[in-house]
Length: 290
Image (cartoon, rainbow, N blue to C red; front, top):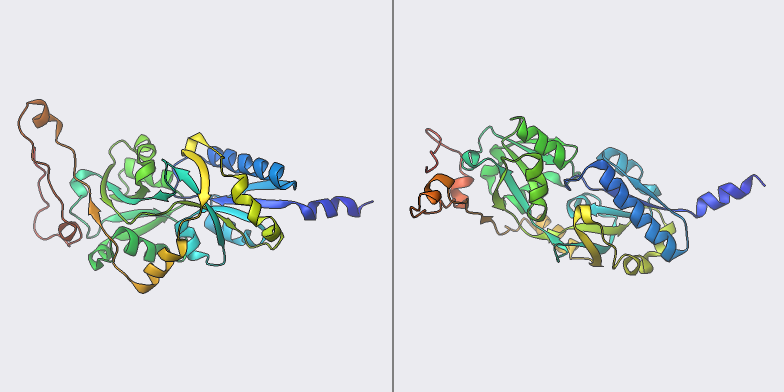
């Protein structure tokens, strides 16, 4: 009689989530995990428990108990044992584009400036250097400051405690809601976004083929998720980083300044070549056109 509850407990599956770079509050991440766990329970016919983690160390410690996980692809680079199954559709695409965020006056100054970023794991610095900064060694002048999540980074910027932070182009408006001064300064390589993968437990192996189909139509408005598709090529991203191949870097032009635009004067948009952005400054800082 006493063994029955333990047997039932052993048959439960675990679905875990770690999404430090997605700018939503912890309770919204918790709702996403519970909704996905509920859908999987119905489709697989097995109770699925949902767990969400706000700290990388806790997520990694419990990874062996997780049958399925939802993570950002930079996390997968640090955990190569995870097996990708499907990728969330956000804005009609399964890809996200990492971007460098900051105030316009900081766009050409890197030396001794701070870049805050989520804790993605062991591959974090390689990811930042390869995907965001195109392998340019000048980016090493930035002081890298890890934070628990992107909302913490936005709060630091709002309080003047950092000059730069990482984000995703598709989720930029959510970051700007937390820190209105933010602008997009650089775009990096497009990468697979939120990836559903098989976790460290062997229990989920028999259910893996049905998981992607179970979530094909899953939606979650707070994160803009409108379904899941066959996963993007995470291995391609991993191989490119290991090989040290330079990635495309696309500067984003700033908008016309409001005072000149309102006066009807022609406005020439300032261009910021990557070589200028990523070069240690000399002399006084540049003055923005007004």
